Image 1 (tube, rainbow, N blue to C red):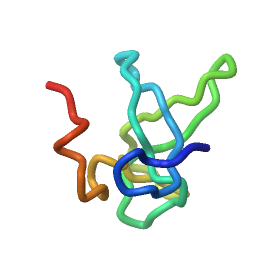
Image 2: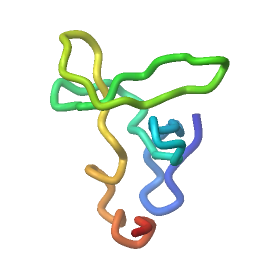
Image 3: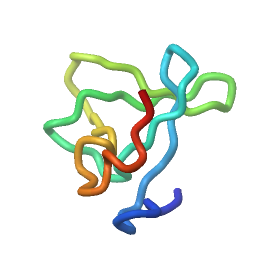
Length: 71
C-alpha cells in the first residue's frame, strides 16, 4: 500500500491485462469494476462483472486525476 501523491488517499498499484500500471483505491466499493487477483506474485486488476468484492480505479475518485493520467 502507498498513498496518492496528490490527495493522500491510500492506494495500491495493479497491473492491467495489457501490462499497464493502474492506481486502485485501497478499500473495496460496491461501485467498483475491478477485481484484485494474484498471478505469479503480481497483483492484477481486471474488469469484471461477477458478485464479490470489487475495487475502483483511483483515477475515478481522485480530485487531481487529470494531472496524472497518461494518454
